[in-house]
Image 1 (cartoon, rainbow, N blue to C red):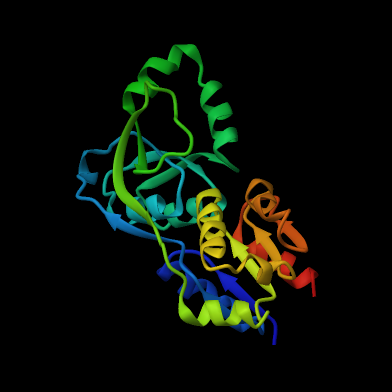
Image 2 (tube, rainbow, N blue to C red):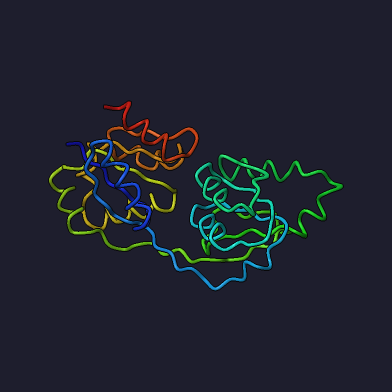
Length: 230
């Protein structure tokens, strides 16, 4: 049975493992991140929000009670937001770059109101600053895990990991640091990395024998790549 190393948070790894198992793969879990949700008054939101992460989308979907419009990065985050009937998806971007391009197209006559009424709901680690006129509220903290589970270390040392799935640049960087810390870089050179994007996957280009990446930054396409690689 082929094996896959999952590197999302604990809860997301659990969901991904169920899907992986249904496809006939065995999964190992090495969460790279954990979240600490912060107190926040979602009731004050009433016009426009910007969401760039799945965890931010989950919190917004769970707590927003007023009808509003959302600009969101990623189809998976959009699907999460659509579970809340009060949220209307106004703009859907594939990545932060495309989101910035979309915001730049807001007509000048509407810009003042748009920027005044828009809140960016973010974690404490911001990889791309949005225009300074957009208010940013931090609704959760991201913490990067500093250890690898014993069973993952042992599986890597047996060359028993066929695929490694990585879901963000920061998580990928953290994983590389841990592999170096545990002297495991040599053991992943025969593994295939499947990244959520080209930028993420290429972090492993000098280490692993093969890298694949999703063109549309979705887990579903990462699974398609996995199937096609068989």
